[in-house]
Image 1 (spheres, rainbow, N blue to C red):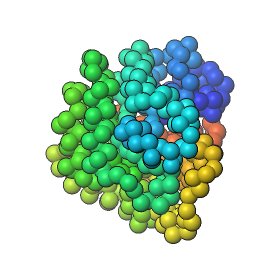
Image 2: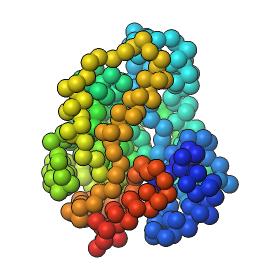
Image 3: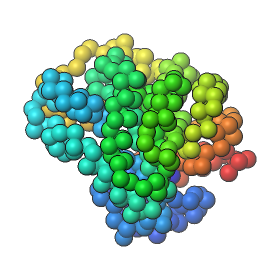
Image 4: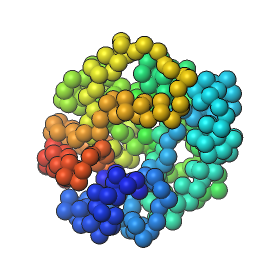
Amino acid sequence: MNFSTHPSDLDKFSGDYNKIKQFLKKHAMHGLELIQYSPWNDGVIPSSMIHGLHMRFWPMWLDFWRNDKSKLIKQFGEKSTWVHYYGGESRDAIIEHYQKELKDACAMGAKYVVFHVCHVQLEHSYTYSFDYTDSEIIEAFIEMINEVLEGFEPSFDLLLENLWWPGLTMLDKKNSTRLMERIKYPNKGFMMDIGHLMNTNKELKREEEATDYILEVLDSLEDLAVNIKGIHLNSSLSGEYVKREIASYKGHDYKGDFFNRYVKAFSHISQIDRHTPFTHPSIKKVIDYVRPQYLVYEFISESLNELDKYIKEQDRALESII
């Protein structure tokens, strides 16, 4: 299951890794896919419990990567704000951060790491009107990730995760193929997020429809689908919400404090990307199609009881294959 070093996750288990271990055992899970909120410590979460590391994601990274000052000023206002957000003044900050996380992954003995391939500005998360194409973002990502990976031995799988904003959506075989062909790392593949794929279709109203849609996407990938090594399993039926928000949007306040706008946008995004259990048994067709090496229950929950409930609900949908 997904987990982080954020207090909201650690507090569910009173900061006691033995309680996390027992919870995993109770649900017949092999371990955690970790996100580092604070730096990982083997004494807090033992490496033996960690199977994957989900890398940090800057949603609006491409303008910084390109050193596009006009767009950075529009989004952040003061230079000091974007320096704080990215942790430095140049693209080297991104490279250095990711290389540090990959070293952490090696120290943890992680079997895989997950990168988002996406770019979206705060305003565009409301309007769905974007500055960059999938192709432009994928090109920049390939440039960035090849620089990040330079010198790393292939000790973990590099898995690229789809989102519903521009970048890797998994709806275009050609763009997805370019990632597999041009990233200079042998052990690579995709982490297909079911909820994110659902978010690419605002007309979905039921999970059975989502299953049919996902199977169509998989068929369109043809032989490339074999590169899907992992699945983030969750559900997100938010099309009606998205359509209402786009229709009612009245413009973006670029004058307000960036971090206040950032927090507000994340509240909006949580209504799009819901991370609730996929409860219809038709999803077994997708699991059978992909036969993933890594199957991750990825939820957002408010309490340990809710997390427990979510896992049980999704287990019932997969009853015959887990």
